[in-house]
Length: 404
Image 1 (cartoon, rainbow, N blue to C red):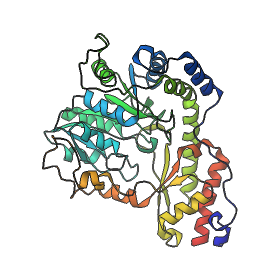
Image 2: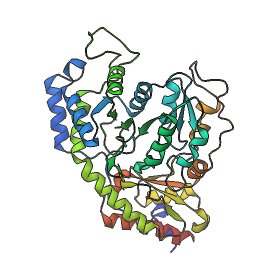
Image 3: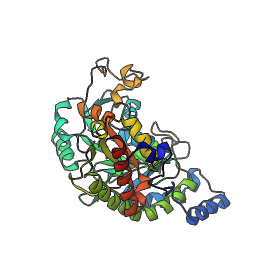
Image 4: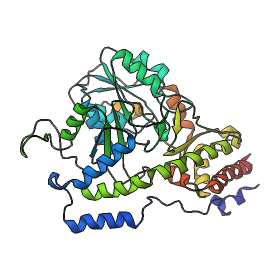
């Protein structure tokens, strides 16, 4: 097959379907209109729709409590603060994740310690955690990257042995399960994002779920300017801020939640099927799914790309060709978090990070490889059907044939 058959060079696209996102219908429109007409848009004095959403989301996750807020970065931040992290404490995080997993630790005047990822899952490697633990280590933040569950049994066992708190970063994990339990409900707390690309969205927004009553009370206070439920309006007990979700976001999320389970199972089935198809293509290596995952929400379908199997075609060129074929995709992070200027130049703007915290010599081999080899297919395209997954695989075979 010649290059002229590829869509990038004027050929016919392999996938004609438009995988639109976000998915919504008249239910969201009606719910938002009702809030608009009510005049009760925000303010703690009219947060009934927010409370309804929090109760529904906690129930879905199987936890007692949920605290919503303005975004997933803030939800993680208030979880870290409420867990008892103090200035100078160390928190173990993976280096292959969005910046907020580590930057929120910095915001709390604590020290992120990067531990490498597993090559088969891109999740925090339990086998490498204990070597990074010091007397100052107080917490672990595993990230369920792409919606694939971390090895939570191993992580929790290490945490219990060393007296550490586990806070799940489930920003990608809406609806996914580990051994039958919803992600976010397994550690002491679980943080979710509702940013526009997420599997469940209100444009922006976040939530933390927990079964710990004291942690719930602290997080609820932090998102409401430090107030307590039993206090007066101008009584402020904690160093919080106005991180409250609006009523309009809450009703949108309530409607989004109603379709999440069905969408998650569609993504799961399509992701598994696509992995089977791609496993037969030399140079394409999907991530594995054998560490306790019982439901993968596939916020990202990730595979490793080997240029040598495609005639030396570079990954960036491959991603461009694949996108032109009609498959929403990205090449992922350009480098691990510790290589960001924030860490290399120690632009921390806080007082408690010790001088000994130096990231210039940090090197995590598997995270480096992931940044050089990964390709992400976006979650909305996993809401298609089996014929779409077959078309995705055929597009990759077409590119391979043109360059091999």
